[in-house]
Length: 304
Image 1 (cartoon, one colour):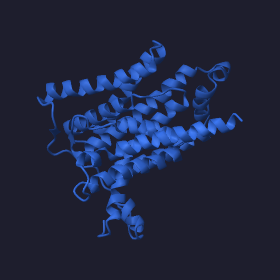
Image 2: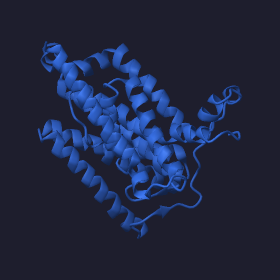
Image 3: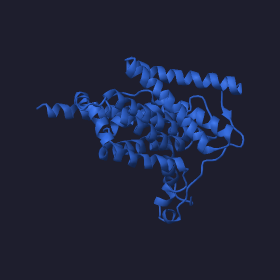
């Protein structure tokens, strides 16, 4: 990346930081459209983060590490879905239990395997490849912001396009949306709403596994609490983005910029460090309050 003015590195960092938010939110969008509030995004991301870096280090292969990390997250999503849908447990409680289980599981496994409950660093861990497109890199500002990220960051943007196509252009997407808006109509056609809800949960497991892989593999280590509330922020992004892929993309850019700003502001602004570190979460709360106010007045206007 070329030597540019101060805002450019911060914007470049925004693109990298927002990728886990974006992937988790896209997966959560499918469950939301299927009529379920998925608060297990945080736990699914944590499982993906742990297993992807462990398997990548064990096999020496990034591809296998990411694949097995995603597999672990999808397996956890299946258990979450089975308990919620087949055993008819309260999905909110089951989602919360998934988050707590994931946190406990990775701590126990980390201690049993590595004898360490803290930061686990891996020697000779394969590096995520960084993509550079010379044609884009030569474009002023745009090249400095969008070029030089690891491959999974670009995958997160591709997933937005794929999600939009699936949701709005395929029979599967229509059925997922129908499951959330009118499950009786789906059942009347001979299809199972429960099956499509399970599909949606598994999709969220896939994207959260990928989101977790970004967090741990780009760091080259596993840190307890590495997700740091990103699953909850992704959940907010779904609503702030009006439950659309492009809206989620915009919301994640905002949250990514907030975290990037807090990173750059440390030591540069005479403000208590705790406030600066809390800035992304303050933005999340403010955004959710603003969304609730706007939604309230929209509903009030539609009733007139």
